[in-house]
Length: 339
Image 1 (cartoon, rainbow, N blue to C red):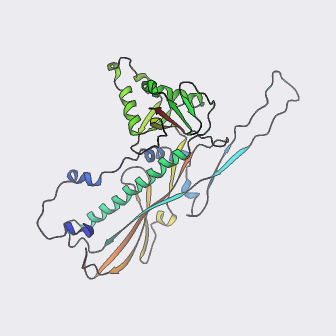
Image 2 (cartoon, one colour; image 1 turned 90 degrees about the vertical axis):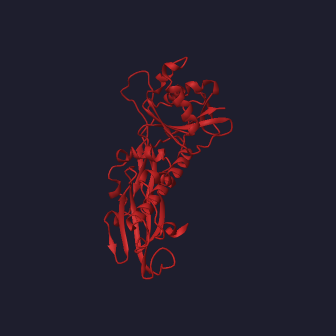
Image 3 (spheres, rainbow, N blue to C red; image 1 turned 60 degrees about the horizontal axis):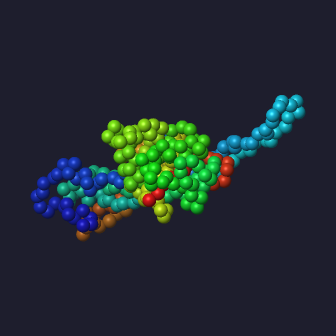
């Protein structure tokens, strides 16, 4: 029922504790967002001072790994090629969620104004988490590598149409080992993060955590890879039962940003720019904008002489990956388990 009429002061009621009310405010898991936030400060320190406008375009650059001239002997007149560099524009997106309050809406309600506001604000932030996660999962698929070091890697089959490595169903128990082997063949010899769909995560966890209960102890595979379970659909192509994204640690992240006025907590007339640290612990700071307007809310949730307060919670962000000079090559690889 809208406008909080269900909790207006009409009848005496019991109030339940916070744990009892928790199912209504349960957050959807957002593992890709959490994974990306781990690397933010190391990726681009002090980015807020660089991007000082909503519309200012930002770029990133690398020095390419240039070819060198092969030889079989020393020479006093050796030559060689000059190196090169690459530059790319960061793609910034904005996500926002809006809601309305009134100055007197708590006067006729069993819940105080502060409790009503906290509920609406938390809901907006939870919804923003889901918006970012949805974007991030789609971004991983768009930004997966289309380039491999060899079109015939060992232990897996490379699908050059769907751009993923496929592990045979018969090798299901060895999925983790084959995933690490495939990435080693791409010359990524350090730790991996693996964003796995619900089916793959369950199968891998079963294989890795049975210990001596397995006819063959498979737990040794676990080192060097960290599985991150996702409940989102990672888009399995035909013939693939479950899938995941393999990401070398330190090569993927998110850069969040809010405008300067929000950082400065600016207020002018009926307009206010402020910010709030994410109460869900991601480390993101969200922009909060509000303005007021007089209203007669006597027929709904407030009073005749009332004030409506309109809120918007927002965030700008860009997802980033390590740059590579080869076209369509990225450090992010998709891998799947055949049916």
